[in-house]
Image 1 (cartoon, protein in one colour):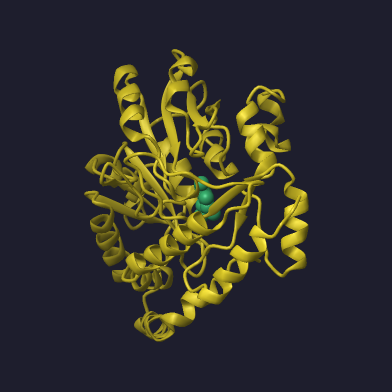
Image 2: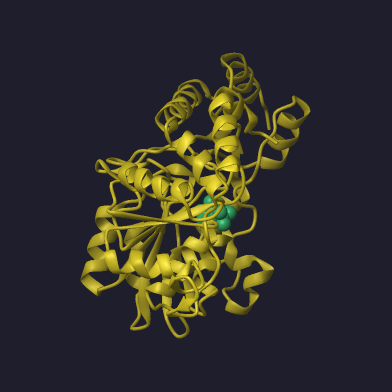
Length: 362
Ligand SMILES: *Cc1c(COP(=O)(O)O)cnc(C)c1O
């Protein structure tokens, strides 16, 4: 594993342990005060009016499309180079993903969206991949022009902003995952949606709990996607430190950007007006296999995010998107590599990683 998630835990260990015991001793474990307070605090952090806690990031995505009424016969535009959960959020509802190539910042290329819009297009799913905010001004203009919904997949972008506004509040619904490795990670599965729309928030709040507003009175056929009290409590602890966590990631990213100077490696770039919370630090290398083996031999773990783009995965063979239709997406899948990036990495570890990467010869 390239990233040491226990470092963050140990830094705030006392707070986490205290909160866990507090919840265990409270006698209330699902949808209680911790969830309510977390929803309030997270909405405030993002700058949205509402937040609804859910069981995972994937649930946030599919429930968002379900509540927006997007399903069979509808098309949703999404970038080709995303984590497969983004696409499953669309297809679980029976809707069809329409893939668009990414730009040089690994987000959807806004200039290639319009050519993919048909009379079946209902929404654009914007993924702020690797922690960098997408080009929201251009995307919003297109969505307004064609009357499309915007759903944001913010699973990797907690706190990232475009033009000073955080990701999650640019569209109709922002979807978050709090999977342990995310910037705001829980200690189990967890997720949430944020929105400014009271009706959507209310519908999702009911949907997540078997469609019931009042116990045993079910308005709609819903699901069980509840955030539990322990995770919500632990997330409240971490939210109190998220600024520090993101700042530390940024410091590491700055060092990598300034000090990695191996000509065989392409470093990430930052979009004008956007910022990144550096969920991943993704480099590109033509001879990736050689680099992985060399770093591994030197004790440096890396991961590929992601080796197989969704349209080429076995799961989506039925979409019949053939190889070579998304050449940039496929090139990225062949070249990207995430190097260690986490809060709590020591200066010596950073020095070592930089030195090893610079001394690699493909
Ligand atoms: C992690 C992730 C998800 C899914 O979140 P889970 O909580 O694992 O369900 C969705 N989209 C992206 C881009 C992710 O990175």
